[in-house]
Image 1 (tube, one colour):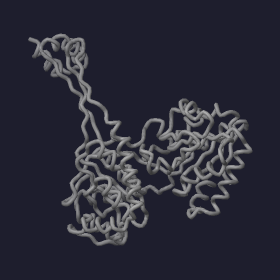
Image 2 (cartoon, rainbow, N blue to C red):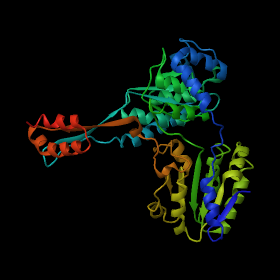
Image 3 (cartoon, rainbow, N blue to C red):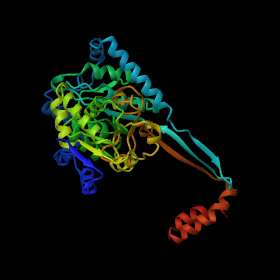
Image 4 (cartoon, helix red, strand yellow):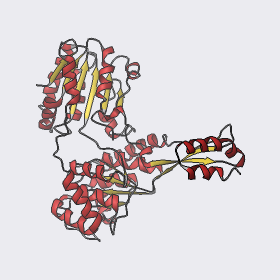
Amino acid sequence: MVNQLNTKDAGFSDAFSELLKANRNTENDVSGVVKEILKDVRENGNKALFDYTSKFDNLELNEDTMRVSDAEINAALEQVSVETMDALKIAAKRISDFHIRHIPEDDDMTDEQGVRLGVRWNAVGAAGIYVPGGKAAYPSSVLMNAIPAKAAGVERIIMVVPCPNGELNPLVLAAAQVSGITEIYKIGGAQAVGALAYGTETINAVDVIAGPGNAYVAAAKKEVFGTVGIDMIAGPSEILVVADNQNDPKWIAMDLLSQAEHDEVAQSILITDDADYAKDVIAAVDGHLKTLPRAEIARTSWENHGCVIIVDNLDDAPALIDQIAPEHLEVAVEDARGFTVKIRNAGSIFIGRYTPEAIGDYIAGPNHVLPTSGSARFSSGLSVLDFMKRNTLIECDADNLAVIGPPAMSLADEEGLDAHKHSIGIRLK
């Protein structure tokens, strides 16, 4: 039975705190194994990659077969229907059109003392995209990770994808082709992250690594951070739907299940001000679970981690939402736009009764790589900024250095850094 809370209950505060503290990251600590794999890749390069791919993916690779060939890409494209390819292209264009708008502008100014100051933005040189592989098809993950890098101006985008038993999913390769990726390798796991971070005889190292993966991939990304940049360490998926009783309960129930079907530790939360309506949604969830192909996964997620919260008034909901800081927030209430203004913490907000979260997973435009586990309190979804960096610019001449130099020398003197002080003063004689 799904967990149900009511703000009128005496024990609500404690129960809500338990909900916030619950840890759904149930994977065993794999950091020790991952560190050994990364060390091996760093020291032995391709040989380590071939050994781990043989061990974990039952696939024998060499320098000639590790990279996905043009022939393999073309063969994959022939297996994708025209309808699906058109859908990928539509999604790719929408994602690109949205992200390219958020490339920041350079800034150049001269202050009152005549000192020139500025900011210059540029893309990183190379980005690595990790994509889950095998029979699972996640073309949307390719689009969402690669297209912002392309929009940012990254010149080299490389994709790694595990190929258990040599199986490459045609949709993943089609999405790579639509995204403009031409360099693809048949490797996965922590060893692939190591190859992207450190480079091997065949694979040149990148500057930023993005993309989802299992516990080994997440641990590896955490370990190589600092050598390269990473997008984020993502936890289990989650959705929070705030809804009034004017919504069809079957719609809201399906929205909740759209995240529950991801995996058993995903989380779906409903906030409503109508207890009877909440019962209708719960009943609708049970009805949908009788027909969904991934019903067992969704049922486990819903019963173990789902929650229905009854509030006295929907005006009480924003404070609860900001504490949860959900990855996905659906606002299905009468004045959805007005309600949304009250929300500070959420990865992505879906406004109105006709905006299901799933539309954002594939085609709306904003990124579906979003902060989880409450990290929307301090972080944002993937964007062009994750593949860019800024240089600050400072330019003085003799006159304005004479104005701002002496107070800088005083501060250096207070800190006991004489070379700092004299590197300014020597120019003021």
